[in-house]
Image (cartoon, rainbow over all chains, first blue to last red):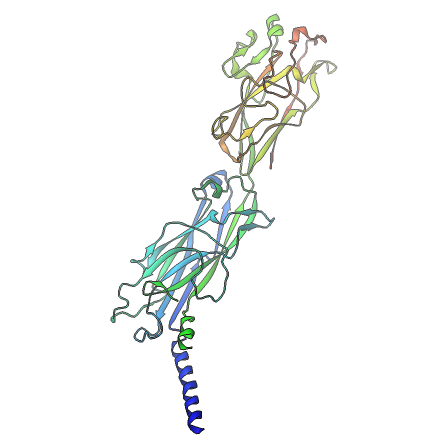
Length: 209
Length: 214
């Protein structure tokens, strides 16, 4: 009887030990350094015909693998993808008018720390996504992808921080080449949409599970 | 248990940026030429044949040097949204200035409407004119009292700038031109044959252009 109790206590301790050790095997953080609100003011016909671009959004990214030398039960974090999406179905105006999500596009460029990253061309805003705790990456287009070439070499432990790793986000509105995404002909209104930027770790160059 | 627990606990992050799109209404009509049209009947031929511009190239009326630029009104529309244009005379007839009792029916004046902009009558055209029937020199409509829809939206958007929406009206008076596709013909009787035989006077009417969003 006492032996069984001891075994049970050991098992419980083992589970808690492992759970605490591996429950968060990485850290990840997006910090919006500027441009948390992007305004597109269409005031002239040329604005409507040509569209408007905003480049004042800057984000910093920090991420690290907390257990790079002990990858039991998880893959080694070696980079990340930055997803771009929204929880909305349309861009909705105060008066209930709508314009398509794809009227807004975004791309990213390196400010510091991501010289080797892959930056995609302008991507359409897509949605709606559901904000939940799913382990799957969110739906949406990828603005950039970073894969540390030194990982998983033993000499490398993936670790980047906000101060040294910054990205500029370019937003466009009404510049999409498709005629349906031009805003000429749209009803005047004050439209708004929340844009989600998802930082998703990469393990061995694929989305971490 | 251990593996399930760990596989769910990759840490990711998301942040939200709010994008605001403020679409300001832009709606302008601009008459660039021909804000004052005068038809001078100085000869019997003017009374018999009329005066004005039958098209951009063909004028009528010897006393007016047969010059079409005298009888054209150029205007453009700049709009961020779909639009339509109402126009018409501000009164039911022309009224003599020397003697206000002298009247001349509006339908002695006719007009044609031509598109000059990117939104042309051919491929890419997206405007229709219920009043004139189409944008051609052969669709002659009578001048009517305000409001009459001169230009309306077609199947596609007609929002655009002055290069897209650019028009010319050619005016004629007493020509008795056939209406073509227009829904409202001008008077088919020349001035000299009018039963009322208008008294010599200087007849005037103001023509209103009103642009509205739709």
